[in-house]
Length: 253
Ligand SMILES: [Zn+2]
Ligand SMILES: [Zn+2]
Ligand SMILES: [Zn+2]
Ligand SMILES: [Zn+2]
Ligand SMILES: [Zn+2]
Image (cartoon, rainbow, N blue to C red; front, top):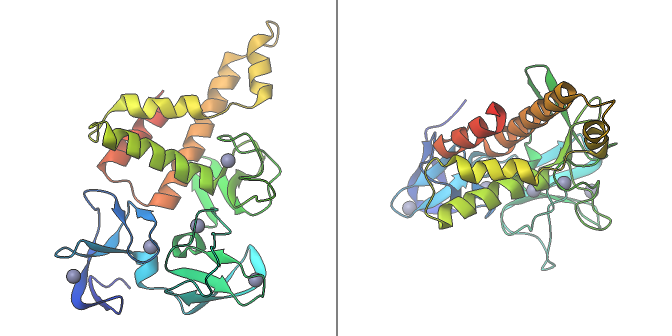
């Protein structure tokens, strides 16, 4: 059940209202991550909480970290700098942390990432260990010794780090925003396609005359984009207007 109005201890003096599609991205005052999707808001104070941050579970388990018993905290326990074990980004506020001495941390939104994404015959699974390299960064690791979570297709051909998809969207949004092209602007988003690395095998097929199969490459490309679209929606929620344009430009060419 969804509450349209809540009281939250982190903002005790005003009610927070559920906003379905925020007009602009916001910074969540709970986890401090950028938010694009449904949230609880105090309009007077420009205060926002992701749904996941407004209504956390006091304790939680995650399928990808089976041995861990997580607790929710409004402030990171201890004073050591922490990062999220799913997306690799800093933990600056609300967090799930496990009880192990070498504790794992998860942003509330990362804790709640969908396990499987399905659309138009594409099926992606959230995984901590992947067989394939990420189509965005070309690596299995986000940084040295750290893999983070990825969405990967069963066949292994389509794989993206959660971290890389977050970066991709945030970078492109910032660029658009600071250029004054915040409104629908295909040019910004068509750059995204260039940033995505096509795996070597596909390039080889294109350059060898005899095995040149443009159809195959374009089908691959189409699926790669569809996969990206699915992950963007999983991370950032139902697209607001600016996202709708982004996703359109990704899947239409
Ligand atoms: Zn949040
Ligand atoms: Zn307020
Ligand atoms: Zn643990
Ligand atoms: Zn995270
Ligand atoms: Zn990556």
